[in-house]
Every structure is written in C-alpha cells, then in structure tokens.
Image (cartoon, rainbow, N blue to C red; front, top):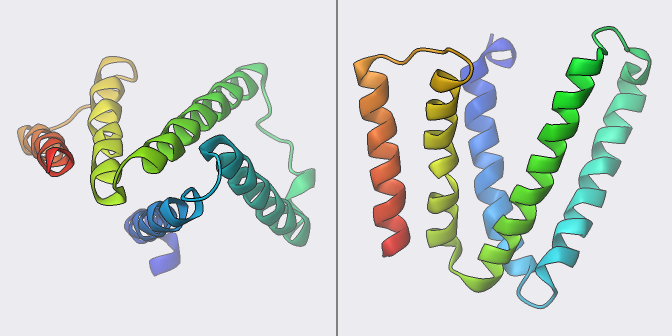
Length: 142
C-alpha cells in the first residue's frame, strides 16, 4: 500500500519541497526573507496544530524522554536556521540554482549518518551521493 511506503512519502516530500521553493521565491520578492520565514512557520504551526487536534495526537506523550526532547529541540533550531538561510538565498538568487545547492544536505546527511550514526552505504550508494553532490554544484554554477 502506498500510504505505508517510505518511498511514497519521500517522493511526496520532494514534490512539496519543489513547490516550497517556487512559492517562496515569489513570496520573498516583495518582503523581507526573515518575515517570509516567520509567516511560513505560522502557517505550518496552524496546519500541524489542526491535524494534531483532529486526530487526537496531542495526548500521545509516550516516548517523551529528556534525550528525545533535546534532539527535537536541536532539530527545530537547525530547521529554523535552515529556513532562514534558504529564504535569504531565494531572495538573492534564482530558485533553479538555490534549490539544488540546498540539496547538498543529502550529501551531508549521508556523510554524517555514516560517521555519527554508524549507518552504512554501499559503493553504489556512495557513487549516488557523489553524483548528487556533483549535480547540485553543476546546476548551481549555471
């Protein structure tokens, strides 16, 4: 079933990320990029809050450990910093060049996943990561 497939959700995420870049580029054309990031964040909070209320998930607190909360806090801080930088880059550059360079995060995640989390990649996996990095750089350089 598609709704339980990580591939389905990852591709859907990629599609929404593409829409994010295009809509954000238009959105930041006439306002400050930090204000645009704030507005985007408020929309996300509203949508997620509505989903959590509608599904009754605000009560689900199992799994809340100090460690989990710390890493979610750090993830939130990293997300905020990423969005601020991304919107600033979109304000200053072309979406078709900013978005691919932003996707170097795929390369960074692979390297950090292996070195910090102990994950493993095959030779084909590393070759793919190399091509992603090279492609992102080539596209961003125009």
